[in-house]
Image (cartoon, rainbow, N blue to C red; front, side, top):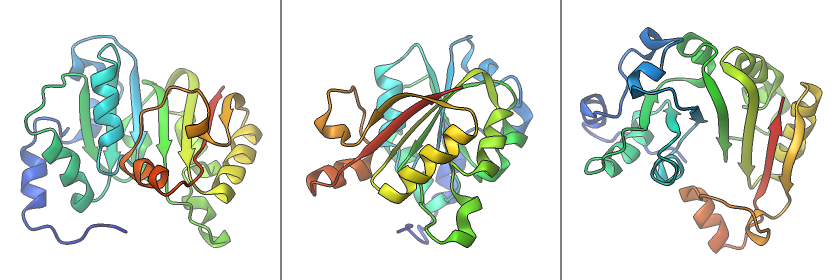
Length: 208
């Protein structure tokens, strides 16, 4: 469920040093924002930010960008970062459908963590592993294309495996119960809750 109507969220977000204003102006040269040539990893739909913040802390040699479209959600990572110093992390408030207007041939890895499953057939095109989005990703990857997906939704997972392989991706790593397998993993806030409830987490890493 989306958080709603957090008073003053927009102004707090705009003032954050982690927010990239007018991101389309940096299209094709986002590395200039990080002042290095390190790989750029992108999380689409970053939620409250636990995953990408902890990834940036764990891997300082990688640049991370998180995208979220709602002020009411983006305010949470912005608040968490208020007293942090993570030069390898930037945030963008944007709709994922516009990613080709923001990036061009510069992303190394995409993370899709607990994305909305959009279960109705008429909403299939909104799924972040639909052909519509996979075609967009083709235009923003720098070279080898790597997508890592985690979800608690079995039907979305099965759909994604079919969609990704149909689009030419090969499965490099797969887990039908991530928390039971010996696979390095940084959790999202939703994942922590699911784990406490004993829910199964599915994970796949694909490469093209």
